[in-house]
Image (cartoon, rainbow, N blue to C red; front, side, top):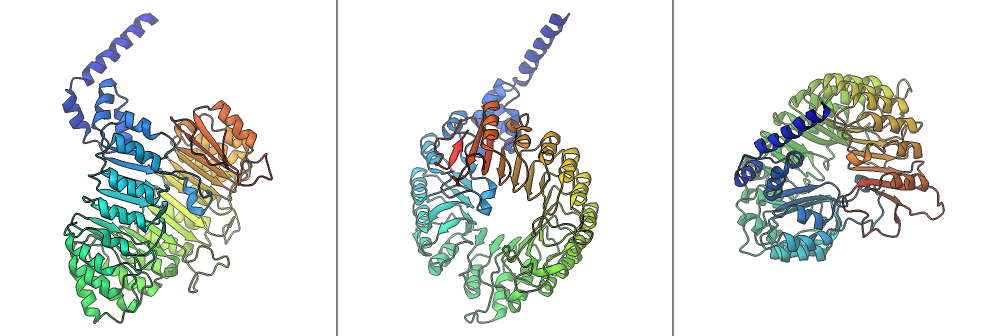
Length: 590
């Protein structure tokens, strides 16, 4: 009887494969071309052999969340027709200087393989990768049809590398440099674009520091009639900005330069007219050194704004309160804590469609609790006010110095559809500032109420109870960031046992040891990565994990030779390429 059922199951499987394979290859490839999500395409490739083959040949874009999870040779064998690559390198905690210099994630070996396998490559989007000037020059000379380069939080290159891109990428449509550690040798690189060059659609050099060759920039903007995104650095004056806007009224995203006193500006009305000329603007950023006297010039351009990034503008609450009524369609807002709770009350009163709010500290290294420029910063009162006025909030990143359990419970009750909730109480191990209790019930309320939660960052005084709540209720959680929290191994164990969709777990300065690390044996292969630093994990614990899970890369970063037993920093990730070949001496692969 059992063998009969087995035969029927096999026959049914064959029948299913026949049914899904009825499409001609070219039709199937055409259909799969409409599937854009890399997750969906990966699922499609598992249906049957024909779908695997069709997906292989029809895929033109590949996303790689960890550059060491696969080798460039494997990618090239798997997908022969790639035009666009998105590649991430160092762990996210490198943003907090927790990853030593020269750790790795160099792009050059990838480029060498791609030059042979994908001479038709058009787009390269890199995050937290090391990129040298030699690599940028190699890229510019190797891919004749190259169109788009995005470097986010990358390092190792200078403006000389940008000059190579400008010189040789004759079809370039996008050059986007964000938050990267670039060696700024001056603004002459803009003059390397040929006079016949007209294809640019996106130009972002906002985080460069030196003065640019404005004549070259103005001519470039004038020639590129399809330019939609322009984000300049703080060296661009208001008068220069006015001239750029008059030559590019078609912009949809603008990052201004310095927004302070400019004696060359003939009249405020001319600046206002330039902004009024930009009818399609939906994203505005920059506004360095903002002066309130020029803010009214922005008002005509605010009507259609969806995203307002004020994370470099030290606005006060009164200035924000005057600006926001002109932004009726705002969906995303980034501000500094200089706006204080009064400014957030203005957000609540004017931004009823808001879906994302990020509040950054003006001085993240201030240990005295006094925000830059005085004032009190933001507190739980501003947080609650926003939640009452903005019921559509889905994403919050909130830096503050005090919070209460009741306030967080109120926020998520008012906005139950959070997918990203990142609360950063800047004083380590800070309790509820009224009751002095741990903040366990705050994050318990978050995971109990927000059923769609995918990303969570916790802070404040937390016991293992917080992690028990997370393991019990956060069934859709994908990324969890933890610092200075927990009491025992049980905290980390609860998360690993209870969060089936967890993909990234980032932990620093927590009392989690070997038992916690080894409790994830059933989970790590389905995750992208685990980072642990300044915890209680030992070298022997990491060695045992590596023995039990040979398909994982278990790396220990040892910068201190004084203790041979403790694992200072541990990075665990799945890889089909085996141990990496470029590990520096301070990275020990178990």
